[in-house]
Length: 163
Image (tube, rainbow, N blue to C red; front, side, top):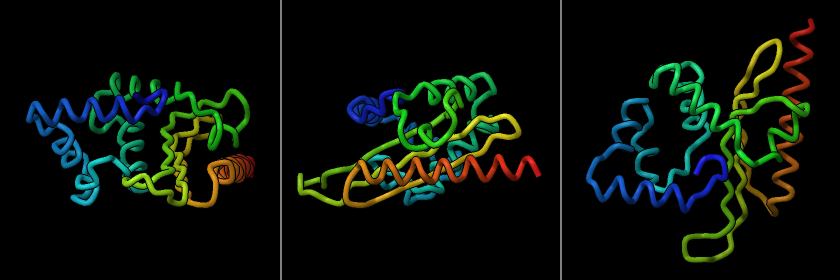
């Protein structure tokens, strides 16, 4: 579900949790401080704030134990998506990331594509969180925008560390 960003697997998991009447997802959202709006989205289309909050919670191990937080970040670092943020940093740089794309409306009507990529970039001299959400004419253009922003941020952070 995470490594391949498989929404089918995510939907199956959420459907089974809902059928069991566990309220697990809602409870977790409340526990970590996500807003009611985030909880009502249902299909887990998060905001930049939501994604960054979840990544910070994992990075700082403030909800799960250090072991489970590190395990979650390790899984996120195995994502098969190598465009976007990963393409904007030097080869071999670890990025614990989540990406998602949206290319059709609920009724199957074409909408402007969206591509989102959020991650923690692990680098010598200090790690950082980067979250970029885009909407535009084509996934290819959006991929390039995310890669270019990632590269600019990496270069800026690296140059500031050398001063």
